[in-house]
Length: 112
Image (tube, rainbow, N blue to C red; front, side, top):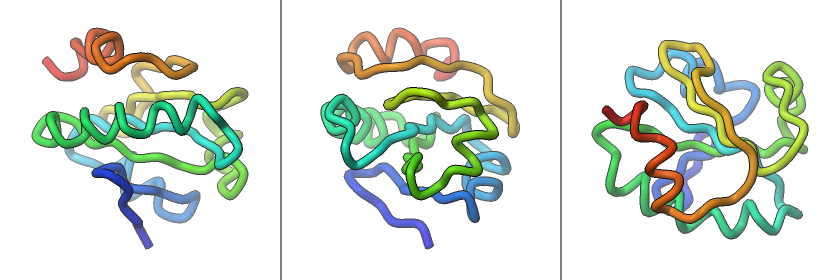
């Protein structure tokens, strides 16, 4: 079951394939954890981008503690890790919270 928080869907190991890898739009995945402070800082930033860019980009998050299979598959070692998937493949990845303007700059080529 997919749950939504501020325009950002939560995915799991079970539905990562259909929700992310088979998505029509590019998907920004936030690998997160409940105990991660920078992850919480990033939540409103991603919520705002999700609302503004919903026609060009889908944003989801996955909890690394509850979904170890996907976390290990993509070699995620730190939270928050942001990974952009296009046509089922990871095309871009960065680690750490950042302000909205900088994140949008880093996503320019994905949103073009």
